[in-house]
Image 1: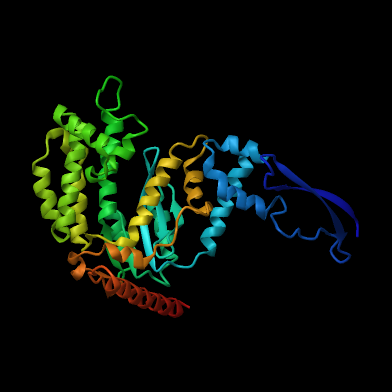
Image 2: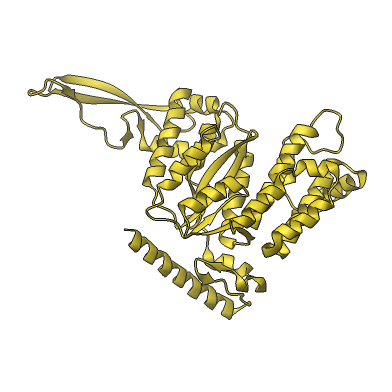
Length: 398
């Protein structure tokens, strides 16, 4: 033994007070190479923070609006906290298995579009691709990791370039655009147009800047009485934002009723738009034609709804953060431990309707069910069959 050295390790705060552990560690000199070594501290990450500290960051990071504020509270420098978040995100990516059901979602923060990859079966985010000039190249590299164990189902956004890329990488996978994703895309177009064209001072009738995104992504049947009254007044006054909102709902209802004829529905809908509304939805028909040519259709898939709603809620939460870079905000999707819950297949099947009879998920028909004991029995059998199907896929992947 050469000497003793005191190491300072950050621990989880106690009663709102930062905690530092001062640990006395021996140092040894190797007689063969002459290098100095110290034993590893158990329960620590890189000898700088404890595992309890990492868990505390995962649980409470989203509670603070500023990274500087949170770093000061836990007793760590802001740059060190950013590196820790990115390190946790990288470890999370490496520890996850290839997904059976892969979700590719557009995630818009501060008017920049990122990609978030989710495991729909586990109900959690597994990767992210920040916006940038090399975004598609990075997305191709991330998806190529799953080529050896290709997913059986891929959920894609309304983006012809992304759909074409996924089709080349996973030619055997079933690909759909969930109707909820289609509605999110329409809401994104409306919100971005609102922030660019109608958010100037003196433009009466507009929601506040903090509420534009939420209102743009809320359908009329999801609104309460006060919001519906506001929508009706806006339509009666001829305000372009509220007229665009009504046009969005009309298209979404038409696609929901006739998903296989979505292109014809969109063509008829586009011809009835005013000039201001056509500017809002510029490029939409081109994307839908590309979807049609790649044999990708909108579909109502119950297991996807929770993930899409969680991402929408997360976007609202992360958009209020200050002193956070876009990369850190996206990494928080992976570092936070309680963002998603595993979807319950039996509960989701209670939403099945007769028009599901012709739709197929993973080769298993989605059976329209009735209430009572018969519904519970069918749900249970379907869950067992689906679990057996997934276990077979995992054993084949090994």
